[in-house]
Image (cartoon, rainbow, N blue to C red; front, side, top):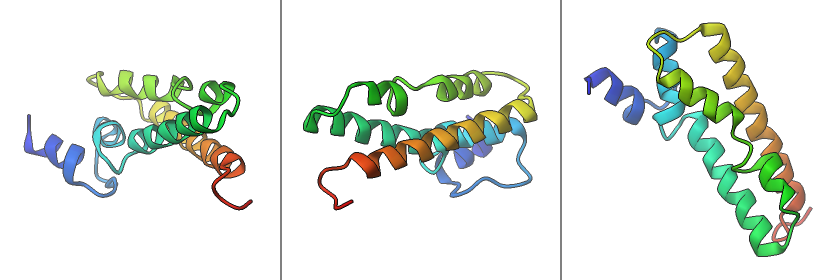
Length: 115
């Protein structure tokens, strides 16, 4: 693996404007500061709330791990030699919206926190 990929996947704390579309896709898929890692953290929290507090299991489909369209498309882009910039931006925006929606659901349905 190249030093550039290792930096993007492991060390970078935020994406750089000078990166290619492929670099940006790699950052958001592999880096712990990327959107894929943020989505996985929300997936675990949603699953935990559903299983531990008897909340409706449909939340896993709507806000959790079964809501994987965007992460699946991001994985597809990571495997491409050339990444279309417009498609990547749309997928990243949709993924951020999924994360925001999950955050709102978690906040509204977390019985351990005062609402």
